[in-house]
Length: 75
Image 1: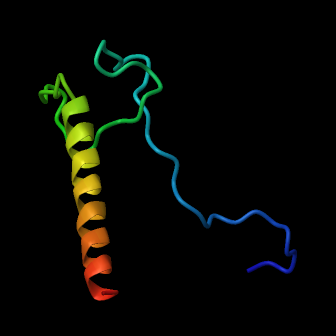
Image 2: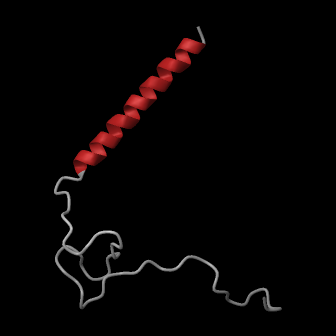
Image 3: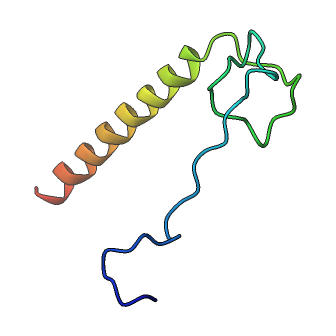
């Protein structure tokens, strides 16, 4: 550690790797985040809104269940 408290350090997260102009495609335009886990030809869900809807419904169901459990305790 240097004596200067304001000197730059190498601490902190690494920047997210992005797709370069040479590797860009319709599915992954240049500048978008690279997907480490998925191979280049991996199928993409054409309807991701279904997963969002299911997550919303699950959260709503959990909230209703917690409300029922809270009301049963205070009777």
